[in-house]
Image 1 (cartoon, helix red, strand yellow):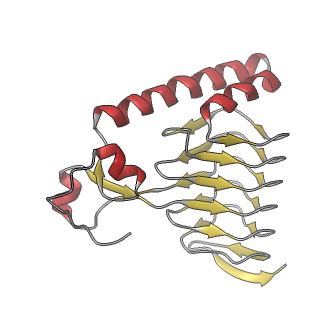
Image 2: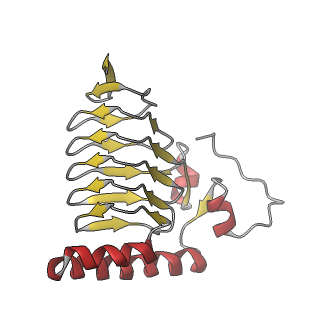
Length: 194
């Protein structure tokens, strides 16, 4: 994320600033309304999953930005807005995905995501004063097709994981991972090409 700087002449709403990937204040009423809607829909999905896992997938079609044919997500799921989370066809997401989708999170086709994964787009200023004032930003996350992400992985803002890659359990992905790579550790490092 770029260093914190505000243009005093910027007349955009906080929501417009957020969607552009610029610094914004999250307690804006428009942003909070979208967040509350996402919480309610995610709760409907999480509750419905216990009764009928397949029927609950239909809730995701209304909550998420895109939800590919044959994809399956296990509850519970946590999102900030839902509308900026995109899951490709045939992708399987296991229990307890946290997807903080301030900006787009794109998960490709035929991916396998294990339990307790965190996909985190939000960033905060390094400078203390803007943090105290509530400024934040975001950077998108992209996960290519046929990626396997092990349990407990954290993917940080702005990261792209190339297609056919594998991320080892417990890794913290702070930088882009090339296609067909096995990456492990904290921070995740490529240990071989697949």
